[in-house]
Image (cartoon, rainbow, N blue to C red):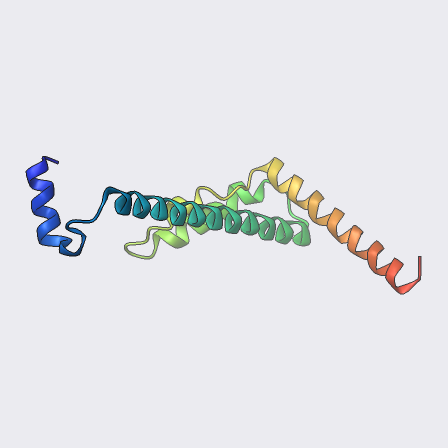
Length: 127
């Protein structure tokens, strides 16, 4: 924007920031970036958790690993498309549910269960 338009915008919309030093605006920018980064971390964590939950359901139902790519993810996309004005469809595309990912997650889950069983057997003195 042109400097004249920026100053007019500041006067009309952000009157309380007139006369503030440049450090104030730099700190605001850094704070917004930190919030944005933490939001992205939360989304990635939740998508990973969702991927593990889907993999667990697939293993429990004894279905082929490709069912996530071929059926589950398209169904989730269709579900979100039914709601008007929905902005979550782009997040659904980020769910890691390829055949190899599901296979790896199922192995991780089974290894975790095995470790928990051994831990409790040792704690209870049966091992």
